[in-house]
Image: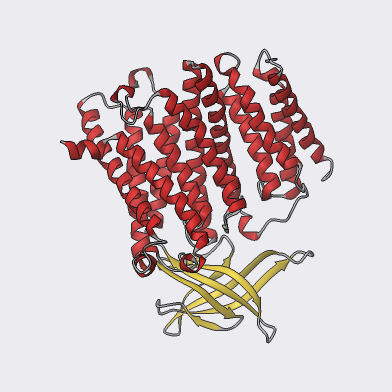
Length: 245
Length: 257
């Protein structure tokens, strides 16, 4: 069957890979040419951004269509290849070394599908600025966040060596979470991560900090799939045993 | 001590320069362990170790440290893949690929600079270190690809295939570490910047390349042969250079070297 041969073919993989590289290379240049268009790309989940900007301004975002199509074709190609080969493998001699490339394919699929989940069902709430002792609503989560305390350690040269904020999340005036947020150490609550992004001093002289609140429902699955990929990849580096070849 | 450790950098540079000189003169060492590049790698490792101790962070931040780590990883990958024998000829181009980033680093301010708080995490060293290890293997792939295209040889072909596979493996692991780090530091494992896009281009390029050797050459279209595969292995270094230096120097990206 010609369609099945196309979907399982290594040549399809090669051309889809090439298309991805070309689309990505074009995109990296176009992004710089249209900073106004792409500046808020990370300020919301991808599906929302693409629905708003991708369809409204198709010319400068056409590389994204190429990128998405190439990614979809690579994912379908990996899935079909693995299905096709696994049938052959299980009819013959099953060895770890023959299975490992398909474990990597399945892990790659896991990353793509989990990223799709995050890109559709995730949430981005950027730029929550709160002075010390003040409150701010956290997007549509129904939480109010209070910054209880802000701490920073500045080097003599004037750059920040460390900064952190103690925050409390409230729902209906009841505290639901409290913790210290610092760079590389966000506060997680109900699937959201609270990240400290910036800080400064208000005109009144009190410190303030700027936070993002993000939710990536596919992140844990992406981590699991990535670790599976890495483990299979490292095992694949070892030469097969004699009876594995 | 801060100034003295730079002596190790210059000694490593001199060793790499000696290796290039010998290779261009047609003199090959009897074993890798007796070569100037091996001495250079030892001196270079000592330099990086001392600098790590002095600065308190992995010496991989900024252009100077990035270039010198790149050079170190190219030399290390060469020692792994190119041994005296059939693959030894690859040292002629590879020694130049080792020397050039080290010369580039020599021209840059070498002072230890403070680390931005977001970089102060073990994920920084693992992400950058594994990525540069991948770059090193891809550089070895360029040298081996050139030698194969010129002279042929099964051992060179196999070594070039290993360069793509080892480089892809290291780079993949580096990307996983980078994703974990970005998730904890910036709130998302992925952000849309030219650097991230080019990183995935490198990953897809070498992922595709490692698949292409399984296309039987006699199928004709797209005319895949070992020579074309070796050409693509060599060309991969161009993709790496664009990702490492091109994006950082030519395009606007919040993700630096």
